[in-house]
Image 1 (cartoon, each protein chain N blue to C red):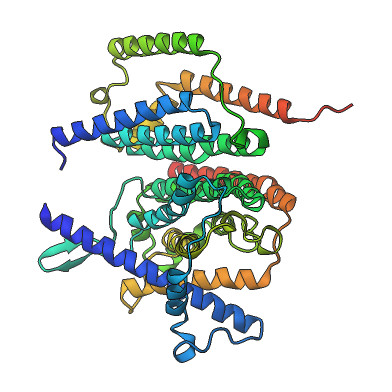
Image 2 (tube, rainbow over the protein chains, first blue to last red):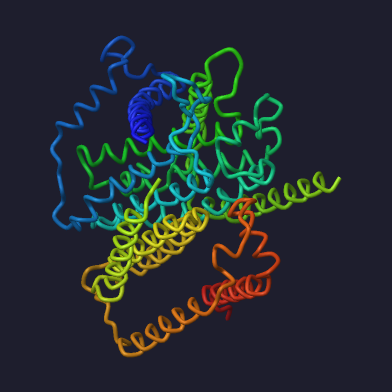
Length: 331
Length: 169
């Protein structure tokens, strides 16, 4: 009993530390990659190649004054950053990072908790993320924040529908909700669900970018029109909590995409955990690449795209997959 | 892993949260806070489902009610600008009717749960997994209620579209 508690606690601690470090260096990576894509060189002065830039930024944010405007709703204002941050970490509870290993006489699983409703957990937790944004926008008492909150709630509800439908194909083929079993079913590269569910994957990644409010779907913050939207009135550590949660969400989505479509930790030669990190890294690169490539959607385009293109395609994908699964069962 | 007393403590805690937040929903003046307490209430119900080892229902509860229904309400509240401001307060004019309906509902639910046995856990074979069994039951034994609910939802959807559509003159 106590061994389980200790092992689980160590795993949780390791994962949280890894995610927070990952978030810090994701900001560095974003600035560096974006810089080079735009013929700049990005951060350079803090440490070799600017590698200490995230540390410098973090320290700067901690020591900044925490300014709370007069007409905010204090309770919800304080609650909002936490509500944005916690769900982004909760996703990692069910993501399998590595194969099981035997260590110190115990069998240690490569996942914090192998829930039998794994995928549903991921989506339930993702759907909570919108509350942070909405509460921040409403409690700030600023019209920019309010508009950002309205946009984010409309956008996230709209894209969540297609987001949820896009993975039903994977569930139908895998016949399980457990992320661990889904990874185990993708032992060789030909078994990867990205090849069995190509349309499902494209829908998933499109909706995932919209769910994490990243370019070209970054309307809730839209710097040039809404002055950062829902977090306009936040400063210091409260602001950085929003900032970290955005990157934690990106890592979470990349991890889920890796797990569902790209075989998770499966791969030859290298240790499983390394394969997992490589795949997640490639997804993070994709995120930044997209940001450097595409302009932001107009709001009506965003809604039309979500409801008139992604949603019907997701339904079609579900029906076709269900038909094929039934056909192979019947044959 | 959990023994009876722990489950009991968690159950009472969750029930307490559900009742308090439910009361807040109907009694607070600021409608935005009402919506937030509704979220807390629905979330605690998901906790009760987990306690009953109905993980699928818990996830569905969070996904549908907390993640979609409640956020749609909040969205509507934010869109109607007057309601989101602090000056407009909620006035509960239908207290008598409300109390009457909820008492009737409570009594009938308690009577139903006491009388009915078909949905009891031990009456069904869960060897295939809870979710699979649930899906199969919905598609076979409880087909009619399931379809009725679908028709009801469809009617509500059509109604919403009719209400939202602008009149063509």
